[in-house]
Image (cartoon, rainbow, N blue to C red; front, side):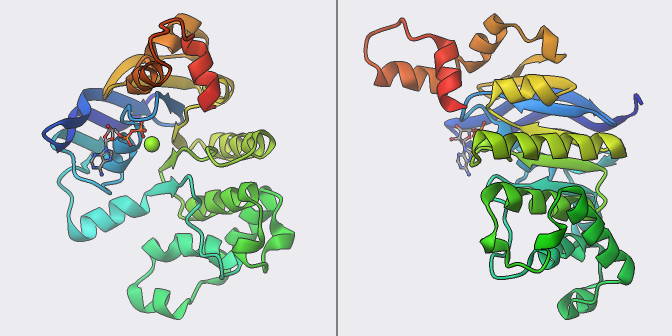
Amino acid sequence: MDKVLLHIEHLTKRYDKDTVALRDVSIDFKEGDFVVVIGPSGAGKSTLIRCINRMIDATDGKILFDGQEISGARGQKLRVLRSEIGMVFQNYNLIGRVNVVKNVLYGRLGHMPLWKSLLGKYSREERKAAFALLEKVGLKDQAYKRADALSGGQMQRVGICRALIQEPKLLLADEPIASLDPKSAEIVMEQMHDITSERGLTCIVNLHQVDFARRYASRIVGIRDGQVVFDGAPDELTDEMTAFIYQGKEHEMKLKESGPSRQVSVKKVVVQNG
Ligand SMILES: Nc1ncnc2c1ncn2[C@@H]1O[C@H](COP(=O)(O)OP(=O)(O)O)[C@@H](O)[C@H]1O
Ligand SMILES: [Mg+2]
């Protein structure tokens, strides 16, 4: 599969005159790819995802999603585009007092007319799909529990089901495992990777854990200070390149905090953040 699903051209995002979060980023994402975007905190990873799903407007540049311009989309067109892009969040964004299967079904709201969504009228097919997804991530027997009774890892797996029931063409995940212990993180990454590759679904995941990026990505993109400084296969990401990517703002901050000693190993900084 070589079709370009997402085409980004000269994308710049300036929050204010001193904060340029993305600088002239041009990059294509192909259908079926599992891309992991790495980079230190403050590099611009979340900003990139927010521009793609139009949570924020880019300052400059163009984003084409499946041939359609996202950047200028409004109203109904924007609604349709958004329904085709699934999101997975660091803090899961579930409704805690609502049960698990309902949380999954909320992923269908973008496809329903407002009156139906207000009545919570889901079709039999939608309910079946919700249970099938929960079974896939090993949470079928938790379907009627309140979401806030689950562990963090389980909540994130519910978050993945909610994004997938939307039947998106693109799945975006912003630091999906940053709040999880290593074992839960592994399960979440494993499931997200396996389910999306089974479906040939394109996935862009922001992570700061380089080890996870290496393990699951079909392609790794390194961002530093708002610019793409690496774009390649996992085995092309050398330790030197990793060090270079992470010599961004965070590295400078750590160096400042740790005083005049310039001997701080960059690799160590990466591990500390992972
Ligand atoms: N809403 C905002 N207002 C102003 N500056 C922001 C905002 N969001 C992010 N930034 C700044 O933009 C830069 C990139 O941030 P972000 O995209 O969150 O990076 P990352 O996700 O890689 O940590 C940082 O300097 C950050 O402080
Ligand atoms: Mg971020």
